[in-house]
Image (tube, rainbow, N blue to C red; front, top):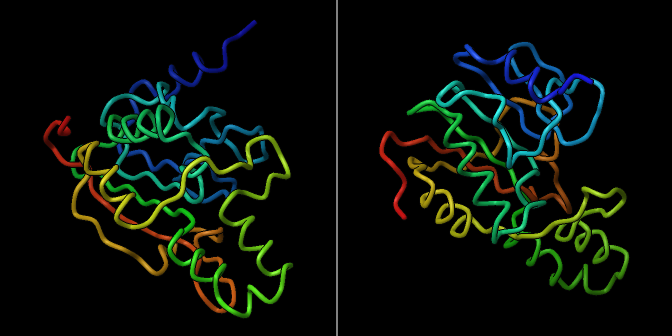
Length: 196
């Protein structure tokens, strides 16, 4: 039986200047979709904690919308950030969108939401995951301070908050009660080794 991961490793052995869309499904020219689920349009089936099919420094850009909150912060998240750093070339760009816990907490505690259990339930699902499938559970919450601090530990720098990445039609653009619920952060892989 053929090993699909080995085939992917061979496929990308000499790859350069890749654009990786982690957790995505929207097909867009030039982007390689990596997803844990076997969906139409997925190029590589893998977790974001294992990007071993891509050589060191082979990607110019990585985009991950509403992916990293599904990882445990003790083990999975550090592995995922280290893999992103390894695969990106120095100066490569990482674009991340995650639920913004500060905004969601404000929405959850707003008097209009507190007066309506259905509205609070919708907000709670944005915090904890929709939980309609095995991978749809959130294990960590992010503020800009938390996400920036974690990424700095893995050698990322030049952080910039974005309203809209203007790349894909996905959850990064989701609004609730007129407010964007995503923390969209762009950063650059530094050339130096990350601080331990």
